[in-house]
Length: 258
Length: 140
Image (cartoon, rainbow over all chains, first blue to last red; front, side):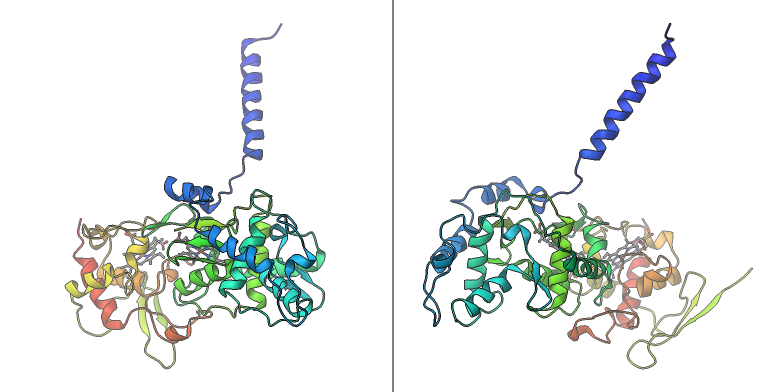
């Protein structure tokens, strides 16, 4: 015969196990999207209201335009609106030619130089951001999926070291804000966890679409640290670390942020 | 009673000179002069100069956006002595190595400082004294 205490403790155990299992599956990660107010979320969700779609449209036109001495368009090799589905979700990727990770913009420029025989586009130029937005839009809703390439591992690790390094006149690290104080208020801004889910984003403060690097640059300037050079290994490592930290989270590009 | 005397040798040259830390305080004014509380209030409230309200709240009814990453500055002058406040502003990391509060009057041991700010403390010695004088007025 079962005693009452035994039943109670079996019940308590069941409750404990269920709660524990839920704690194991509940993902504590939050996209910056979830920190925004309803009107900004609505702006991101509605393609006809999302200003980032303007850049996507420009990117679509550039995709079809013949460029360079080879007179080829991106679309001549990659036809269709879904040719690049899932691609932005797995960049930066390892580049065997330079033995280091390259990001999506650098990969676009590789095709411009090698396939189209054209000049590379300047980092953060309107054209490069528009092409990146057009490509990233094709991964919307897909899980972030950094490649399991062992050659990338040392770069992910150095990216994490940069994330934890204090720098600048204010002597802060990325981790102190985005791991330790995420959800808190830095003056008027809610500190997001710092996930790269939305990039390229339309940022109200910029009145434009910009890359993840531009966002990182803003944070470095805020810390009064010297920003890295646009094509530096440091940005590639930080982006790679951010993508691995956000593995499995949904892509939202083009995101909208305050 | 044991008084720990620590000499903090900041930069050998440059604007920041050595301050004497006694226990958890810097008893002596950095300039040898008392600060000005009204100027100190302006420094604390200014987002480009003091930056304090990025993290702290305080008795600033005119400032709409104040941070919530740090204790309120209200009552700081009742909780701490002038010397204790001075050390907290000069280099809060000496008391809590993991702190996010920036070191306002330290230039050594910092990494990758932006060129425009290299070798300069966030606040001048006179500004630190003004801020300390203002914090001392915050009794409740």
